[in-house]
Amino acid sequence: MKKEVSLKISKLSQVTGVPAKTIRFYEETGVLPPPKRSPNGYRDYTQEDIERLRLVAGARHLDLSLNDIREILALRDRHESPCRTLLDRIRKKADEVAESIVILQHLETELRELHALGLTFPTDDIDGKNCICHLVSENKVVSQ
Image 1 (spheres, helix red, strand yellow):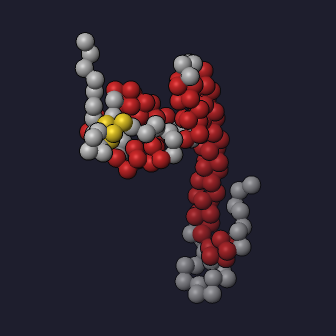
Image 2 (cartoon, helix red, strand yellow; image 1 turned 135 degrees about the vertical axis):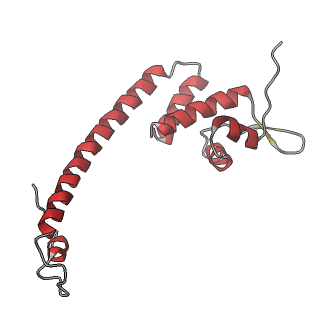
Image 3 (cartoon, rainbow, N blue to C red; image 1 turned 180 degrees about the horizontal axis):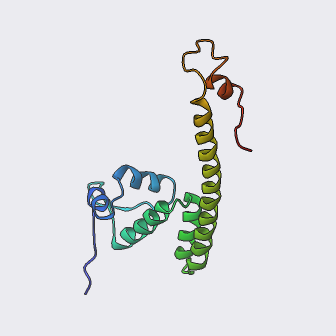
């Protein structure tokens, strides 16, 4: 016979690596169901809670939204496989990351070009009219 796991929030936090404050937040926002309570009012978490929280933590590590996570968990709660939905969310997140990388690479190029240009200007222009400050304040884009 399998013994029922019963953990307090501090132990759940230790086992999963999720801070107790975050666990409480997940409960308040419906990501985690309210846990059972011991007679003295302490939260008691089960093996099922551990598994659910590990899935939530893993999905958050991948930067999936809480709404996406709720949707995935709702499928599990209805005894439906969440795998296809999770795969779809992972693909969409990868696409978003790729788009962000392109934007950041463009910004890096612009910053490096602006820095190189700025090195050709005096650095003691108090008025900011004949230095890099002027280009930045006028929002002059170097590469387009």
